Length: 327
Image (tube, rainbow, N blue to C red; front, side, top):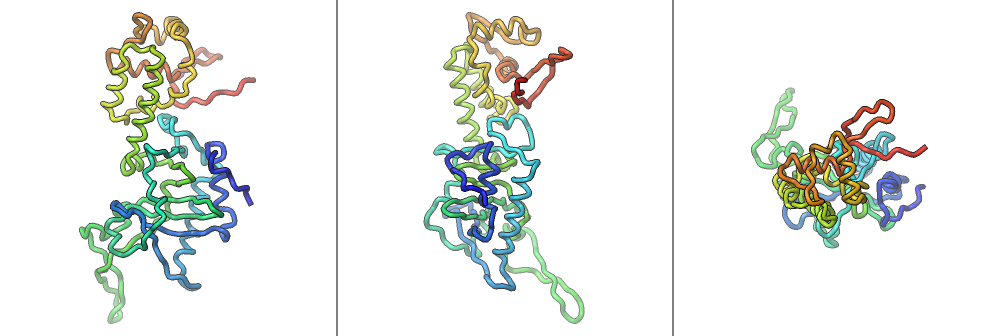
């Protein structure tokens, strides 16, 4: 049995270990199903017929465990910090929630009511809770409209019944819910884990998180006093609502080693670079930004977007960077 991980150090390095802890020995894990709603209370607990012949909850538990295993713990599954979303890689990004961004804070409500059929029309997703010891993992499945056929009463839903030795259709009068075999994201301790950033942007106010992170990076650049008109960066980021690829690249600059150089060192590197010496303007010992192109060039420079081969001296344009091990 995997060791119980420390929930205070969930990270890229131990993500699989933490998730695997919940999946090992499933007979020792509690399993509950909840519906998510648009309106308060946003979480309702679902109940099931429990019998040997018909136990939907147990069958769902087996399917959800299998889905998590296949999707999040396969050899091909890779994890990355959210600062790297500009890389456009097929990885699972880890987002630490906090007081400024926690779209699933309603799961901590100690008083949860039972689900009723009238809640279907207000449903947005299904949350599967896996309990082990005193720890919890939540798996979220978004409810697209196709999974609730009668949600808006715009579509008809029929079932087949047999009468007079022939099969005929009859309209279903009650709304139904489809439990799909998919998981869109995991909630592990105080982190969101997902490869579907578009879902977060469309339904979970991800732009709030992104804006807060970008403001931190811009503040760091401003504190270095290397840009004469920092408002040009702010204006560009606000104009694209943080959705452009350059806004996402700006996140990576937060930990860029380029920002550890002095302005004099940066100036020297620019003046000695055939790529940058005519693209970045310097006046009075500061970078001058006069257009969105100037902002993009500065972001590319600080992000170390371009690299040159030691063998062929060829310059490459790269969005995905991983520090090479020294030999």
